[in-house]
Image 1 (cartoon, one colour):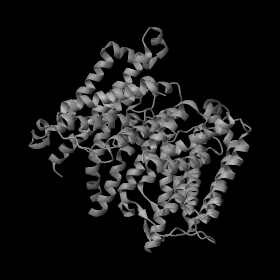
Image 2 (cartoon, rainbow over the protein chains, first blue to last red; image 1 turned 120 degrees about the horizontal axis):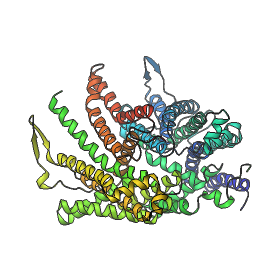
Image 3 (spheres, rainbow over the protein chains, first blue to last red; image 1 turned 135 degrees about the horizontal axis):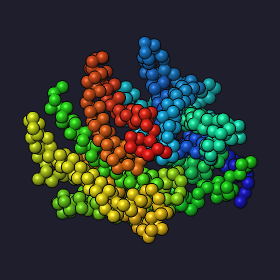
Image 4 (cartoon, one colour; image 1 turned 90 degrees about the vertical axis):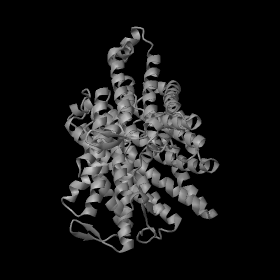
Length: 327
Length: 306
């Protein structure tokens, strides 16, 4: 067993070393893979707030990922076609500016998380899982039937959006941007887990009755966690859309919600670096096994089964043992 | 809009609902008795459909295809229960979700491996392929009526099995107090394998029956699975009666919503906007129904208080 902090530092160093090495060796594709891992890790860190800290098994986080993606897609689509949006009599111009897109993605996914959370949190346990899954499907079918923005085919955005002072089309600069946001998100997660709110949330996960006894409302705590979680995943969606310069209803698919949970579990639920480790492993497996066989999901499924049945703490649990409250 | 169209759509909705019931009944039984959320139920549906298409291709017999579908799904269900699911009864829901998600990956990609990515086709048998004229002069496909008949029969048989037989008594007892019935000498693990195989058999039957009107392809199970979840949330987890009523509600809402919502919107706006907005809203109708039920009764129409 090694202290979790040492593992965390090692993981972060590896995370930055791989693209640095790729830059020196002139392997832009590896940088793109690292960017993909960073964005997935950001989405999974969002889920880790709901799942790890709040104990909410959400099988609908693709909702927020998709909303973030469509926030980028819609705004950039109007900017690239020079057509303003019609919104209840107002005309709003599209934009190619990343900070504005991120803000819209955060607000839109936050509103969606409030609505989905309010309804889903009326229940708990297995109902909660089924309901989040069902709402995910609702957004998926809505995106398919929304023909103004590509319907089933999705939207292509021809040029990556701008960030002041950076050339976002340069892989390493875009990686830097995503990595910075990921580090900020990890900082938020780390602070949140130790804040009075995080402690109350942890208590609400374990014994909601006691939390109620001391005058806190467990449902409200969980709702706040769910909204924060959704917003972070929404931001990741906007970045993911920018990485691919493409959005489609598949961003809303239930498979993606499942994969996000898988990322968190692979790394370690509720652990700070769990999502990043999970995302790194996932992207590596996808790339390495995907080269060997088209059917790499069979192998992923088998690995997942082994982890669930025999190694329940994920990678962090394997190296560091159970989480300690002061770790 | 003509009455004939409305009646036709109502029957379509019933047919869809009855097939959803076959899926939802197994899921709700498995959850009610074993406390397990099974995402891989859609894979069993897919296995049924593929087995049917394969056997129908070999023998040309639809009846044999149905038997094969039920046998393959029940066998796969029993196998999966004994190898994986059995270890999950005591685990929390997160582990169950993950393990059954892993099973979906394995089953889906495994099926793609064996059968390829192209959809298979299962033909409606000759004897059932025509239309019948209903009272009022509506020509309706015979096969879809047969589906309704099969679904209702299965529902009745399931009710009789659970309420009127010794095995049903054990199932109900297992739902209420598993330690007690183990103490009374019932082999719990065999009972559980049996229930799981029964749920799988129903899913496989549904897959084969629906496979004949749609194409048989990898990933066909999960959309149906999620609809079955909506059914269970509306009906109340663990309740077969709830699953039946929930399934009919969802089937009718989905089918009628697609027809009526665009028409209703046409009263307010121009035709093309109405068609777009109406079909977008129709795709969300069943989830809105689910939300309303949740606001009214969080444990579903026939669920027990949590």
